[in-house]
Length: 275
Image 1 (cartoon, one colour):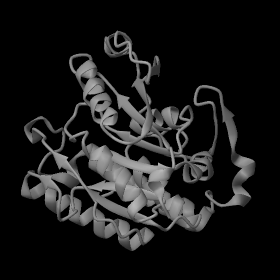
Image 2: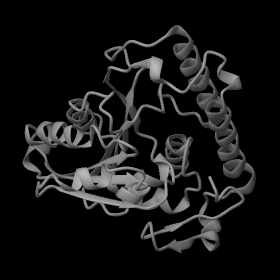
Image 3: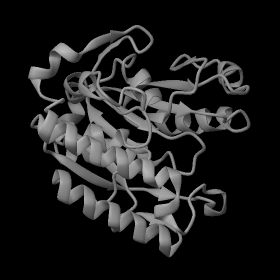
Image 4: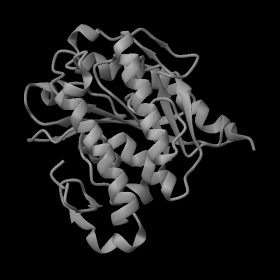
């Protein structure tokens, strides 16, 4: 199959929260990367709560391929990514965290991996042998432990589910997004596990380059005492419970789906709707 004969549109979602100092540089870097690829593209910046001048500063960039959207109240990265995905028109839909800890050149890499592997989803992974990441030993231990948990609970065989760089086929998101519940910490693993449950099993890794000042991290070395870590673990176990005991993500749960006007998308409801 000659993929180079096809003209594909790529949507790149950029969730942003309190990034007023860097957002314009972030968008320019992503834009410059995409202009050097073979892909037609759009960039959708989603400002997750009008807490500072992030929205205003992003709107100052007058680039035809860039759309800036947002909403007043902070809802969490998972919600922001879903908000952007619901507005995307691409054949492939990617997202990358703002702040540029992740080198945006990785977008080109994950897109090429999509076609090399004929994948449903490509996950940017700190655990990939070709990744270039420097981070403390205690963060590595946390990542390996969480990977083991995810593999046991959901059978997902990628070594990192939490890095903020991924790409999906459009059809995956069309079937998966209405079923999701989590809006914050465990959004990534919910999307991946539900996609796999629905038969989208071609989920692979791609390398990333990450430059991060872990001194600014909110995580502590006493990981299991950290509130964010506790919430991630709680949400992960909740996803397993909803999937295997409540069957929330199956077609029979369509009666629980309601239309969310802000998301412009049907969404699942449930006992953890406030997450």
